[in-house]
Image (cartoon, rainbow over all chains, first blue to last red; front, side, top):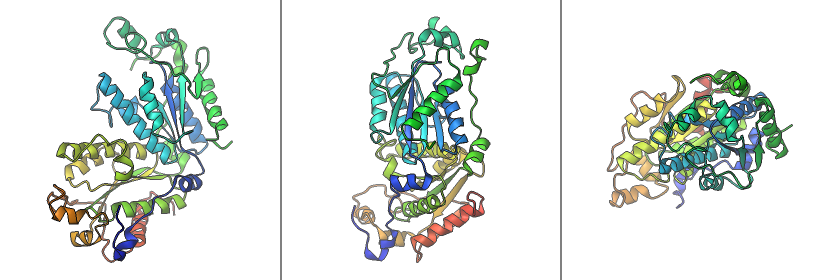
Length: 203
Length: 203
């Protein structure tokens, strides 16, 4: 960019650096990317972690279908191209929140490795924490809070992840959460402790 | 949504309410929507306000071309449809930040009234503050830090707002900033004082 004319030099503003922002807010931003089957517990864990972090006055936010499907991504359906675009936008928004110094948790099935890697590539190294909510499909199917597995088994939902569409499990996620036989509280605390161990929370 | 089976009732999480979040963080989220001609000072004022709010430990963020054009909106060009989609996405992301309790400042020309009203409609009443950076076009053209007005006058940039494309000024913005003859600091403080008067900042 060219320099402004000297008369207007005072109209050339500098951006706040990540370090300045984090120093002022007293926290480091990051993306906590939860991936796993439908009903594996992603949103529920994310929402509980959100509460726990807020109790510590940590700025945090959850991105999931609840707040994106009706807004930013309301123009997207479930075709492969739309699914990829969905995750691209989620990754872009997560990057903005992390850049703002927030701990942002995303809770999307995000079944494709390439899409998740694309989201990882948007943020600085060490700021993307892939969390595999590795609940086995039998447990997910037993929970089935929205009756989706029943419908998928009946063929009423085409391309349902784990039934009629693939789930590409992470190969080297930063954390694996196994939720079978555990309470939400236990899984949420596991994630909070992990964030603490990585230096994203002050004790 | 149907209820989960009783066995898995503990996998049904509740969302944090806006009130709980704001109580924990000690601040109220809002969208500060700056609109005005190219080189009117939108981004520069927004960036300085961001610094001033961070000095007060207020969680804040600026959305502008710098951080959206390369990411979320990199698939969009400058056709009328793309411009509208651009502002729709900016509005959606701003809504998420406000919902997260942040004071988010957006700095886009956003020349169309309907697009700005669409962004306003996404957030709760009283949380959308339209700020008209009402620098006259002669001053903008004199500043012209990127040489865009020169190119537009030469016909090298088609549909340039104020020259060859319309700017629909806000009819009842929450605030009008006149920047002619003022420093960035004066305009930024005017906006900070306004946010204080509306109860978005503790004194």
